[in-house]
Amino acid sequence: MKLRTILGHERAVERLRRAVAEHHVPSAFLFLGPEGVGKRALADALAARLLCAAPDEDDACGACPQCTRVLGGTHPDVHIVARDEDRRDIRIEQVRELTRWLTLQPLMATRKVAIIDGAHELNEHGQNALLRTLEEPPPGCHIVLLAPAASLLLPTVRSRCQLLRLDRLAPATVARVLVARGLPAERAQLVAELAEGSPGRALLLDGDEAVQTRARVLDALLHLGSRSAAEISEVAQDLARGPLDLALTISLAFYRDALELALAPDSTPPRTADGSPAVRMPATARLRQLEAVCDTIDALGQNANRVLALETMLLVLRNIERGGADREDRRSWTSRP
Ligand SMILES: [Zn+2]
Image (tube, rainbow, N blue to C red; front, side, top):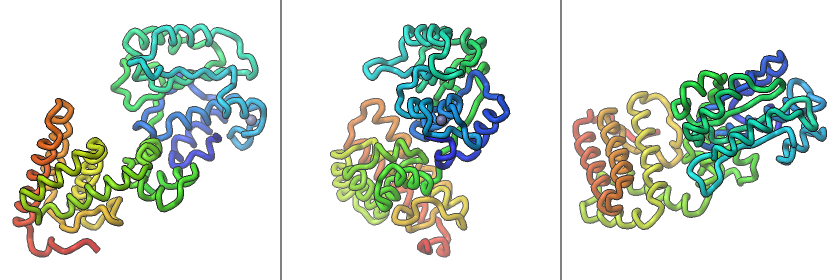
C-alpha cells in the first residue's frame, strides 16, 4: 500500500507526504476516524514510506525489500499492537513489550514504526504506561495510534500526539475502494450507500442478508403512512427475525437523509436511487423520527423485547409521518425528481 493509492483521504495523505519530505514526521501520531474508514491502511502506507529504501516522489516504491516486507506484514522494524480477540483491552504486557522493542536498534531499516491499532482499547494503566514512550521516544522511532475519537483517550496521551483526522468518505469513494478490492461495481454501489462513509463497514455489510434487509427496511419505511396497526405489527415481526442492528442502522441513515433533504431541499442527499423518501416533510418531524429510532436503539441496548420495541418505533414513525405530512403545505407534497 502506497500513500498515493489511498482513496479518498487526499488531505491527510498530502499532509503525511509533506511531513516526510520535509523531515517533520512527528514521533507520535494519532489518526482519528470512524471504524473502518481507512486509518490502518494509511498507517501501513506511512510505515512503508518511512522505511522504503528507494522512495519515489514522496512515496514508497512498493518494490524494494523494505516495502515488500512492510506490505507482507513481516518487517522486523514494524510492530503492531492490537487487542487479542478474546480480551476486552490491550494487555499491559503488550505495552511493555512495545516499549522494550522500541529501545532496540532497527534490524533492517534506518527507522522503526509502531502502530497501535485501537489505542482506545488500552485501558488507563496501558495508556499511562505509554506516556513516557510517547514523550521521549527513542530516536528514529515513530508511533502511530489509531482510534475512533480523541475523547476515548486520556488527555495526557492526546496532548503528546499530533492529530490527524480522517473524515467519512462519500458513498462514491467508498464504492471505488470496494471496486479496487474486487467487488462488482453494482454491488459496491449498493453496500457503499449503507456504509456510513466507511469502507470497512461496507465490507461487513456485503452479503445477501444485508441487501435483503435493506430492501425490506426501505419498503417498510416508505409505505409506513398507509399501513394499518395490524400491518405494522406484521412488519415488526418480520424485521425482528432478521439482523436488527442492521435494520436500525438503515433506518437511521434513511431518516438522516430525510432530515438533510428537509433542511436543504435543493440538495441531493446520498442514497437517492431508491432509498429517499417520496414525501418531503418539515425538518422538525424528521428530527422526531430520527429520535424515535435512537430511542429504540437505546431500549434494545437495555434488553427491551425486540418485536415490541420495533412495533412501537414503527407506530411512532407512522404517526409522525401522518401528522407531519398533514401539517405540510400542499406544494411540499411533490415527489422527489
Ligand atoms: Zn520501497
